[in-house]
Image 1: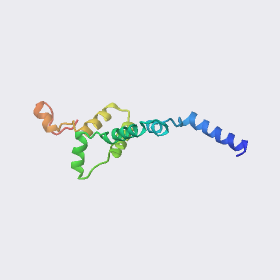
Image 2: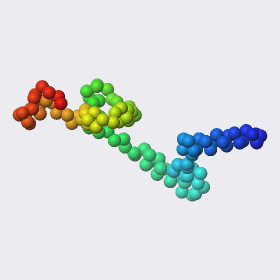
Image 3: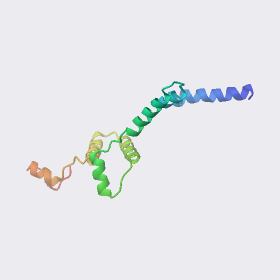
Image 4: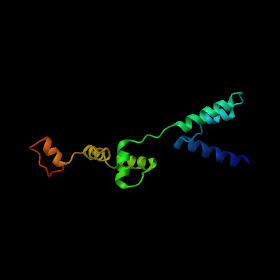
Length: 125
């Protein structure tokens, strides 16, 4: 490799680090595998146990929506739905309605009319 190619690669790497924050940091697994200690196998075993025992959080509304749809919605899809809906609008009333819909906090107008007799039982506002 000549000097010109080396400088091109180095400049591109520095640009990526500066703009995108691309920089490889050693993870815990890298430190375990690169270390030459006697207890490397036990550290690796403990790391794998921790990784396997990490649980995914499934909330009640997720189960309710899965039951309504008749199929499971993957956690990645839930994350995509959540992020997309957070960026759709900045209007607080729309976000409030979205939270109520996802978490099923909304009350039907007939139920609200039972709580507050002056409320209109056909109005969803």
